[in-house]
Every structure is written in structure tokens, then in C-alpha cells.
Image 1 (cartoon, one colour):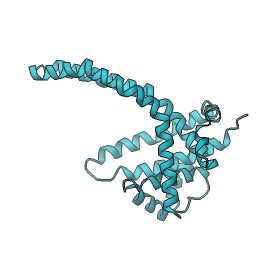
Image 2: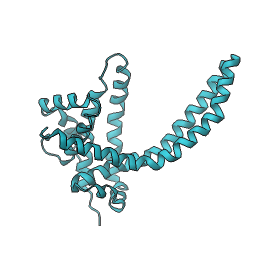
Image 3: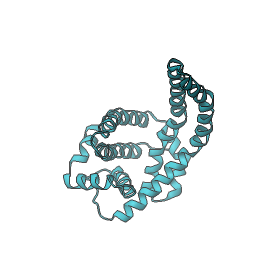
Image 4: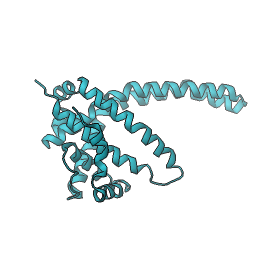
Length: 216
């Protein structure tokens, strides 16, 4: 059984490593090393050492490429459909604004917003659901192509164990990230604090689940 409480406490088991992680996370581009470190956390055990930032950076860069490949089909569909929504509702809202009709403007904007959220949900949830497994497949084998072993990934993804873990991770992470995002308007860089800690926790959970699901 997945130990969720241990995973939540894990970032705080070594305050020195946590502090290093927060400092790395706060620096643009360099924070790819923090992503590589999170993948290292999928192995379980004690927190990994911050031994070689170059190795972690390269691993994080490869992880970003893997994620982009997974979301690319969704982007190809999302961008033109979003342009259509702007054409259908955006110009009407602009015309209403020029005419001073703010009620129609708010209605057009609300419809546009609802449709955009629905479209994003439909298109980006599936790659967001399977990509953590792809990243761990890459981490386990150190082979880039293993991230696209769709037979393995799909079989592990469509299990009750992984779905439960994915759901619990998001129920834990989303409130923290939203609060941090709101606070970031007043406190610069506060967003990085939960981003790193949640990342360590989620890949601790995903790694344990990945190893616990046998594929035949």
C-alpha cells in the first residue's frame, strides 16, 4: 500500500537538501536541475544527494522534452480551436466594449472562458495523466525512448492503483499551488516553495506506484 503520509513528510526529512532544492528551483533555466532531482526522488529511500547539478539539469531538460512531446498533439488542436473561439466571441466583446455595452461584454467573456477551460480540460488532462509514468519509465531505464513505450505506460496508467495515486496527488497539490500563486502577487518567488516540495512528494508517490504495478 502506498504510504502517502511518508511521501508528504519526505521533503522535510533533510532540511539542508530541501533548502538547496528551494534555491535551485527559484532560478530560471537552472531549475531544470530541480526537475531532474524530483525524478531521482521516484526511487524512494532517503532524499537523493545534490551531487552533480549538470547531470540533474540534463535529466530535467530531457524530462521537459518528453512532456512537450506528450502535449504536442493537444497543443496542435488547442491553438486553432482557441483562435476560433476568439473569432466567435472576442470580436463581439470588443465591439460591445466600444459601444459601452458592458453586460454583453461580460457575457461574451464568460462564454469564452467556460469554453476555453472545457477545451483545455479535455485536451490536456490525458497527457498530464500519463506523462508522470513516462518520466519514471525514462528514469528507471535511463533510456529516452522508454518514455514512449506506450504499451507499458498505458497498462500501468489504466489501473485503480495509479488513478487513486494521481487523484490524491492533485487533491493535495492543487490547494497549495493555488494559495502560493495568489501569494506570489505580494511575495516574490513564494510559488517555488510548494512547487519543489510538492514535486518531491508526487514523484515519491508515483515512483512507488509505478514499481508496484506489474505488467504482463
